[in-house]
Length: 161
Image (tube, rainbow, N blue to C red; front, top):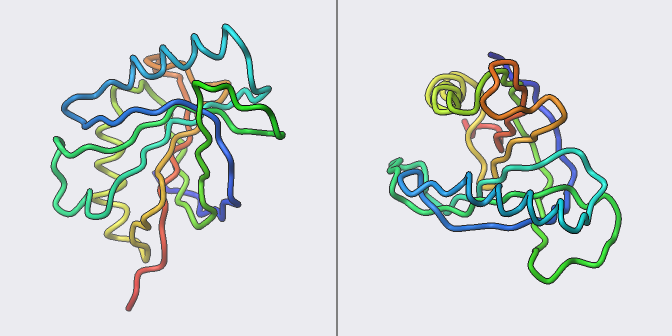
């Protein structure tokens, strides 16, 4: 699995977030709440959903599954809108990303992320950058379906010599 390297311009997302760890993972509840919220009162015409992880400094060094991070369920703000009071804006800073196209069920994601962070990244000329990580869940995303597709965006920077 080889990525495409892309330069992302700054993006504004609208969504909900929770603090969690991989051991106390409440992603399913967050998404259920967000999807119900959007279906009850749509606020964006975007068909792409963003699953965003905001990790604190040192989150990966050393990696410990009990460390908290911020998880977002969001959609892109394609035009200025009034933000509903129970939602917030998240700004994705622009920058360089390694974009992996993943096909398969969401529950196999651990294997994919292990490959990216433990094999691909160390063998590349890149290092992790301190910006949010995210997945774009488009029209072909279908959670646990083996044919499901999503884009995995990993923030990178050139490794210093």
